[in-house]
Length: 435
Ligand SMILES: NC(=O)c1ccc[n+]([C@@H]2O[C@H](COP(=O)([O-])OP(=O)(O)OC[C@H]3O[C@@H](n4cnc5c(N)ncnc54)[C@H](O)[C@@H]3O)[C@@H](O)[C@H]2O)c1
Image (cartoon, rainbow, N blue to C red; front, side):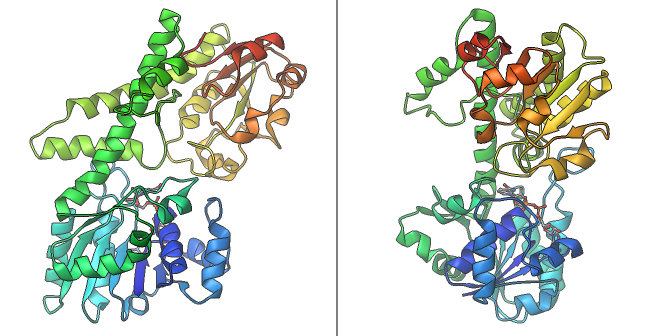
């Protein structure tokens, strides 16, 4: 099948490459000139394991092309996917749909025949209907259907998530659109991925409901971690103790500095607004947003307290900057407020992240020193903090860490290390929700 993907960012690039890998002809349209130039030159603008090979293989086979000419991309396609950003609108928490609507208008102007216009972007319930109206206004002559196909891939394991999804959700209004999307997803259906056809509105809501639920789980275990610290309990044992109950499940019960990233913060905020707009406010999700914001803001204070009440004149090593491992994505990363506050309070920061330092640079204070590796960051540091749980940090020898650092304090916001082993090496070790 021939399809077009509008937006060559995380979702557009990964899903475009995966659809091509399944044998489709995919034209990716990217409007950002440097990003497009990079894609055309075979350079992948984001770090995602396996993506460079997947893109190169499919581009070489002629199934995956990159361009900025929407008319050429949509000529003869059966489906046009909209995979542009839906960031938080400045000031009010709603999703900013201006990129989505602009893309739909551009597509509408140049479509030559029937196609399904599918939102892969995360969009509030009701957006599909607005898209249908725009298509009608711009091209009353056109036969076209609208569908919602939210994307559930996780950065860091995006290709596996796309190719072997827990489920595919497709919201449609007509049999014709259903058949186009069923045919496109047939290869995944053959490997028994459940494909759920729903109403348009339901598909749009499923994505926000899923992310809000996961964000709620993270927030819950973070609060339990605080309680464990006060009560002398261990949050990992607690997480196992509740997670082994099949009704609760073990995933997303790992405590940390609060959720960040390109999706949870903006999607929970948008869900709060959507629920209010429809007169069914969600006090639960409102609380998740407030608790998480407070947690992120309090992490630097926690570090400063651990350091004896002040960091002025101290050197702080920061391991990990991205919002999670296996990505270079810095959007809403907890490291941003933490490092900002430490520098503001007079600390000298030496940071290392395996993939995210280039992206971090414009977001962190200019005084931050970027290091070669974890031990280089630790060299001469008075204290060390772990902000992102990259695998390569797990195997650090605590004895070498102690020798490399000037001080002896490690504040581990991801619980990477065994407290006993750290303490046996002469380090003062603080983690989350454990003694
Ligand atoms: N990143 C994730 O892990 C993830 C997962 C699931 C869903 N989503 C959702 O998918 C959507 C896209 O997210 P992303 O992370 O890929 O964003 P992104 O910012 O990485 O990519 C969006 C791309 O669209 C391009 N673009 C914008 N308008 C365009 C236009 N008119 N024509 C061509 N290109 C255009 C931008 O230049 C950008 O490269 C969002 O709604 C997001 O919530 C993201």
